[in-house]
Amino acid sequence: MKQLFLKFIKFPFYFALFSLYPVLALIAYNIGELRFRQGLRALVISFLAALVLFLLFWLLFKSKQRAALETTFLLLLFYGYGHVYNLILKRWSISNLSTWMLGVWVVFGVVVTGWLARRRTRVRKAAPILNIVALGLVITATVQTILWSRSVSRPVANEQVQVPVLSLPEGQTPPDVYYIIMDSYGREDTLKAAYGFDNSAFVDSLEQMGFYVAPCSQSNYARTDFSMASSLNLSYVPDLNSKFTPDFRDPYPIWRLLQHSAVRAALENAGYKTVALATGFAWSQLEDADVYLEPPLLLAHPNEFEALLFQTTMIRAAQNVDDSQRLAAWDQFRQRTLFSFDELAKLGSMPGPKFVFAHIIAPHPPFVFGANGEAINPAEYISPTGSYTGKDYQRGYVQALPFINRELERVLPQIIEKSSVPPIIILQGDHGAWALGYPQRIQNLNAYYLPGHTDALYPSISPVNSFRVVFNNYFGTDYPLLKDESFSAPVKDIYKFAPVAYPCKK
Image (cartoon, rainbow, N blue to C red; front, side, top):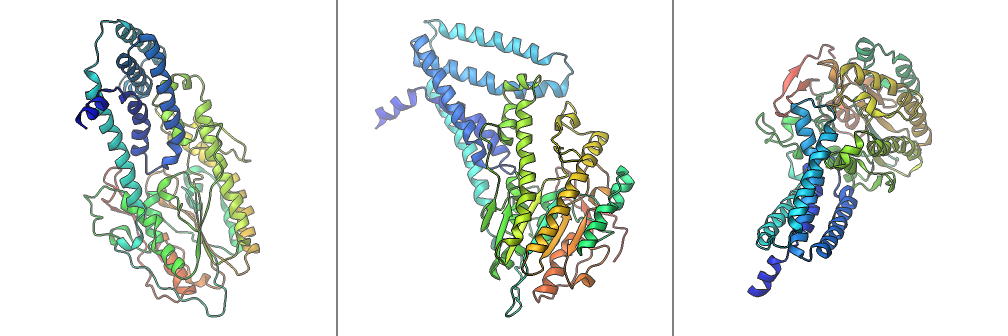
C-alpha cells in the first residue's frame, strides 16, 4: 500500500487540478450569485485543454514531469492575467496596458519553456509537493461551495421565525398570490424630483386596473436581500435571528430566510404550490419550488459566470478590443427578463392555488433595454473601472423605464383576466434607484391589487407590512401592523443598521 501511495503521489497529476482550481475558486467566491452548474462547461474545457497541453509537451520534452510543470505554468499565465491587470489598473494609469502585459507574458512563457525544454532540467521532486498543494486548493474550494449549498437549503424551521397558520375560505377556491419585485424601481415623486422622469401615466394605469399605489412608501432596507427577506418573513431583520447583531456580517442566513420564508411555508402548508422564476442570482432563486421556470441556456454564448471568468484570464486582452463575450452574457440577462414577463402573462391560466415569486432584475443595471425594448450596449453606461457615474446610471435607468412600464401594463391585466378567482398581486420595488442618496434610494414603487380590501392599505405602507395586511384580510390572521421604518447599513457592516427618515406618516 505504501509503495502504491508513493507511486501515486510522485505522478505529476497536479496540472489537472490546477486547471480546475481557478474555476472552482471563482465559483466558491461568487456562490451566492450563481449556481455550480454555470461553471461546469468552463471546468470541462479547462481540464481538457490542460490535458491536451500536457500530452503535447510530454511528446515534446520526453518527460511527464517537465510537461506537467510547463502546463501548470501556462495555466498560471492564462488565469493570472486578468487579476494582475486589475491590480495594476487600480494603482496606476498605464496607456496600452494590455500590449505591455502581453509582451511580458510572452517573454515569461518563452523563457520558462526554454528552461524546461533543456534535458538537464530536473523537476521530479516538485511533483509530490505540487500534488499536495493543488489537491488542498481544489478540496478547499469544493468544500466552501458544498457548505454554502447545504446551508442555504435549510428550511425556515431552523430560524427564529414563526410560520403563520392560515385559514382558507371554506368551500371557496383561495386566490393566487403574486409577489412581483421590480429591482430598484423607485417611487413616482422621487423619479420626478431626482431624474425628471414623469411616471404619472404608469401609476394612473395601475390605479385604473384596480391597484392601490402607496404614494409615500419606502422600502425598509436598501439591500435587495434584506428587503425581500424582511417582507417575506413579516418582520424587521434584527427580529428574524438573534445572530443579526451589528457585529455580524454573514449574508447567508438572510438568503436562507429569503428562499425558505415564512410566507412561502405558510402558503405551502395551506395547500398552495410555489411557482418561481429564475433571476440569475442564486440567493434569490427558488429552484426547489414546485414549478421553477427559467429560459434555456444559449449554449453558443457564455453565461454570466463565464463572462466573469473571462475577465480574469488572458481573454481579457481580447475583450479590451472586442466586448462580444460580455455582450453575449448581457444578452442572456436580457432574454431572462423578457422570459419572466412572458411567463408571468401565462400564469393566470395555471391551476391554483399558487404562490408566484418573481424577482425581475429591472430597471436595475446592467442596462440592456432601450425605451422601445431594443437591445442596447450596457458597456456604454459603465466606466473603465466597472462603476457607474450618477449621470450614466440615470441615463440608462430612465431609458429602460418606458419599456418596463409597457411590459407591466401588458402582463398585469392578463394575470387578472386569466385568473378564475381575483388574484392578490403585490408589485414592489425592493428599493429605489441605488445611485441616489438617502432617503431617495429607498423610496420605492409599492402597489397592491387587493380586490375588496383596499381600505386596509394606507399611503406610507412599507413592504414589511405587505403580507401582514394580506394574511389578515384574506387568511384569518390577526397580525398587528408594525411601525413603518427604513434603515441603512454600511457595505461591510451589513447588519449595523441606522434609521433613515420616513417623512410620510400613516
